[in-house]
Image 1 (spheres, rainbow, N blue to C red):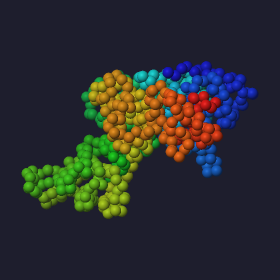
Image 2 (cartoon, rainbow, N blue to C red):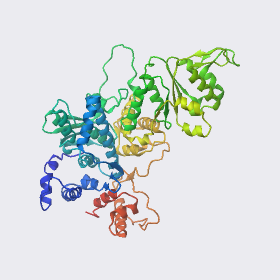
Image 3 (tube, rainbow, N blue to C red):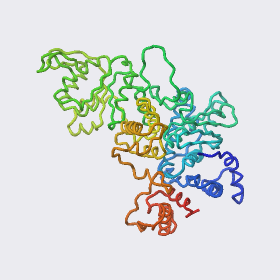
Image 4 (cartoon, rainbow, N blue to C red):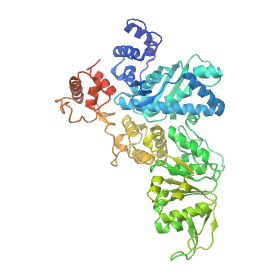
Length: 602
């Protein structure tokens, strides 16, 4: 559990003053902060509280020679708050406050998710409490706001979270008040998105933060409360700011939905898409722009990224929503049957054709035809499809007349059609006919910000489908899912969670061995064994044979072996942490943390 550390934050300044020769000035350098905080935390905070501000500051690098700043492997920028405030004003004035709030909340969510990934990667053995506190330190280090912890609680058995924080000196408030004065609604939109993204990604389940007091409302300070999503009564009100479009859904939490009157059925909520990453939101914006038109849309991306889901949603938000949506997997149709399947067949056209049958184009008349894996069509079939797209009419096999069709075509492919054109496997004229409005859907490994939301969504969905109740994910399972590469993309994540929910005990937690049971290859850096025998995050990478660190460190516990390896590496590198970290195959912050934990360095 995270203990109450209110007094820690209240007395930090006075303690730092006592631990240094003279009081700290109001503005000090990062190096001075790291040294002062390191001395204070070494004597007042247990080792469980790493990563500290000193640990985190070691990840910040300035490269003025080539104009770049790095927070470990993530590029950062220093931006004038007045410039950000100017952008904020223009967005509010041009889009309205609701849409602007959504933009900033989603940007904050992505930033928080990135920082959570950094903490998981570089301090994999940190306790949940320490990892959560690292977010407050990163939030302050990045100049957004000073965070004061009131109380926080996390139960690893149930994955339940609740926390309350006070925010001081919010840069968002400063700019909002300067532009619009005191109003009636909170204005720390990016900060709320950051907190939601950070904690949700860290714990692998949806945790929603809400600002209950704000300086922009005339309060003396900002106060936020974060709770597991199902503990909020009206979480939908908060979550709508994480959705780029109304057709993006979130998991349903809380009690049963109220009974609705008998009205025409809208698109089901379960059909809505789930995501919050910048790539996902960009695709949603394109979907919204092209939906009212009749333009042909080409979805590209790896198998399993959700192309059919996007195509179905495109139909549902278009003027053709009340007409048929017909999906065809071109890869599943034998070449000899492509023409009859797409264009239909007249009675007696060939042996066995005992009745006339309309093709998919005719069945989708007035609506939408989705041609999945269109890159698998033969060259002859491509020519026949091109004629239909150009003329807007089909001729059934064995028929003597043309039939006019009003069908919008949406195509999808997992292969590079431009390369197929260059190799002569795909007609260039058909490619340009299909490529009117391309939308690329990146693989899940390139939009990991969506993983926590998808985990929560699938857990809720399959829990209802199979009538199973599980509490959530263990920390080891969260780490594994957040670091897995997903060669099968969203479809694979969906299958992993459905399988685990069926295998896991009723009312229990989903473990790693519930998820990965079918030969999936896990990153060796995801799981290791702590001295207490429990699974923890990243194991050290294998030591290259050329290094002089011994393969054996003698008998003893795992902790003793680790201590011996670290001491020997530091001896061989003359105490240079960076060189020793390279020798052991870990990052410098990881080695510094483990060395302090073993009492090897101060």
